[in-house]
Length: 323
Image 1 (tube, rainbow, N blue to C red):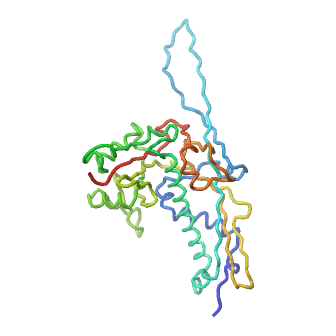
Image 2 (cartoon, rainbow, N blue to C red):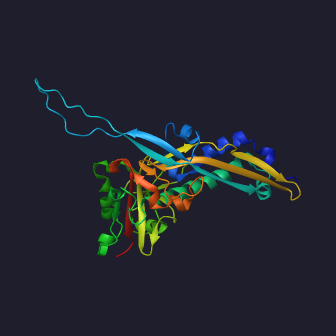
Image 3 (cartoon, rainbow, N blue to C red):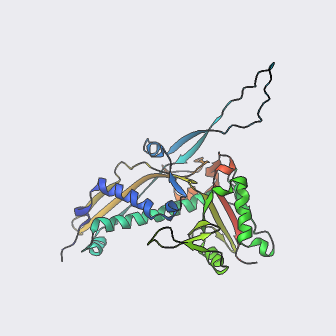
């Protein structure tokens, strides 16, 4: 039986663009609006270097002044600060024979593209979870993140349990910026508890699309990689664009190879990208390689808040599931 070989259907330039686009389409994080492209970040990610500098202007503050006919206004200044992101250089390779068998009689390009795009969508989610673990390691111990963290596990009875009231209290850690939070990521155990309490609603975004779970009008994303320490769970609320995204383009993003003796085709896919919590800079204190791994992303020492707390658009909520 004739087999479809990956090298016969992969055009590297076309394939790479297709996978980047499909990764976004398949990512629940992207669809929820948590991850959004940042203008200019693609160019910065492709410019070289392991750290991407993103300067910004601080907001204007101070009281207004009375106008007087015999006294000039005091002149204030605007200050600049710098957000910093780590370039994430990742890749993987797959033997094509198993894929080729599965693809026979199908659309090989679309099937291979979907498989690889699904893979990268899952890796995005893994990267984000490790970043969250870093931001809230030890309960918001990252420099400046305590104000965006609610821990009720030390309370007694229902006051320690996630529910509508305790979750609303956590959301209001954002103060009058609470409406910026539009999505929530939780462990499946938390999802099950809220579903049993009839606190999960389901909405259909468009005709023919699957129902989307919603908690307190916020789209729910479920992942068992989220922090769980015994009976303590951590849930995260996000605002749109809380995580900035840019794709830098690896020097050789996609290529194929062949081991003729083994009869194996090989597909290699590399990504240079940025997934960065806006307003919490990467300090690079513990990174020992050219680019950080997931364990380093999960270290609090590598993160420091540089935006005003209300503008970070992430709130961590540590809670129990029962009293």
